[in-house]
Amino acid sequence: SILIVDFGSQVTQLIARRVREAGVYSEIAPFNAAEEAFARMQPKGVILSGSPASVPDADSPRAPDVIFESGLPILGICYGQQVMTEQLGGKVEAGESGEFGRAFIEISDDCVLFDGLWETGERHQVWMSHGDKVTQFAEGFRIVATTEGAPFALIADDARRYYGTQFHPEVVHTPDGAKMIANFVRHVCGCAGDWTMAEFKAAKIAEIREQVGDGKVICGLSGGVDSAVAAVLIHEAIGDQLTCVFVDHGLMRQGEADQVVSLFRGHYHMPLVHRDVEEMFLSGLAGVTDPELKRKFIGKTFIDVFEEEAKEVGGADFLAQGTLYPDVIESVSFTGGPSVTIKSHHNVGGLPERMNMQLVEPLRELFKDEVRELGRELGLPDAFVGRHPFPGPGLAIRIPGEVTKERCDILRKADAIYLEEIRNAGLYDAIWQAFAVLLPVKTVGVMGDGRTYDNVCGLRAVTSTDGMTADVYPFDASFLTRVATRIVNEVKGINRVVYDYTSKPPGTIEWE
Ligand code: XMP
Image 1 (cartoon, rainbow, N blue to C red):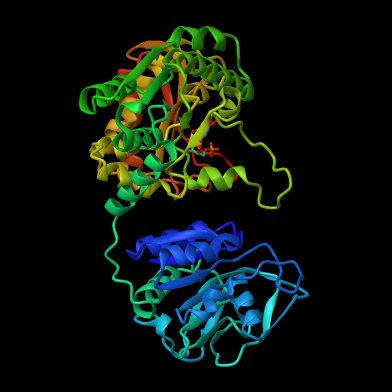
Image 2 (cartoon, protein in one colour):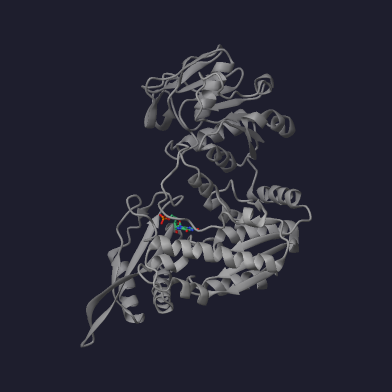
């Protein structure tokens, strides 16, 4: 295994992810708990993360000395490189100007990290994000790559198996970074690279049992993949100590609510409370057109209903949530200052304190595609696990203007046709999210010999890796024409279809 010492970088979890991708188990320990983790894990190597701190500052964090005394390989990334340099006797200075974003390194010498990857003399793209820099490396090191702004972009001490990168190999903007990390954990540390999601599952199950003991856990199902995977995993760990509550707000896609109920009751035989509250949600949404008011009403009502059901179940000690890593970073502002609310996200935040429950969040370190893999590992059907993300407030935020039962039904039909065509064309998995929206605009059309005056349907499809940024999916014109024709012919209430060509940013993925 590999120990990742965390100095508080925003992207430490990405290091863990790259190590997992290389088929190696890792654990992240904050720098001040790293010594204990090191003793317990007995890892084959250590990676030191980046940090918002500055090595020249007197109170900035350091790596525990045992790591250097152990004789194990170490990879220091950014702050990790600097702190390693300083602790081994080199020098780090606060830079007058930092280096942020894309940079090109020039390979000046060979290095085991470049195995099968880079040759001396080549230039390659990397991602930089640093203010300080190493100005004199510690004894035993040599330079193997440089950039204009960082003469010590990559340094190596082959005898001690110490490597330090000024750039961030863990982010996707360093295209070969994942392979470089794989070279470190496999070729330098000698890890076998045969660790799998099955082992992650086993470790999480043990962790959940340890945390929960014989306590009771309650889990809100949204119909989405994340909460379903969390619920099935927890059920495997503690069986019927878990109760799932499905607050069915009637704003789901076609057939989705039934799918959730039959999957959990029929397939997994899990205790499931299904509360049909469509009426309550629709009457509360009557006359509401402001997107934030819709979101707030739905979020609050969801929590109220969930809380009622939780009380009914009685005495839950834990609240389970399918929080993913991107949800964790999105909620932590990059600068530490207050961040602007673009949209009020729908989750059950605030509820644990109100009900005096502790959180169980077994997916906190995973990314969406890893959750899908875990879901498959847990036996969830492919079609369910591979489903596009769906927002908590559901169709309400895909119906600009007032939400009514009638408009939900119209939208569900159009959306189902669109998704069916996407599946038939074999494009579903290439798209991050595709959905229809129903606009509060009527336009004139002609069908047969008659005039129509009906709603406009918008189609959206984007590619993305995490939902934070997105590109428009470039369908063939013939595909869009086919979908538009089918929707106008088959869905009463729609007589015109448009396609949304806006990326994120400046648009958001959802329309509200
Ligand atoms: P936006 O529209 O902000 O969406 O670009 C980014 C991703 O988040 C999803 N989304 C939500 N998911 N609760 C959720 O669980 C919400 O309130 C919510 N709002 C947006 C959206 O579908 C996209 O995947």
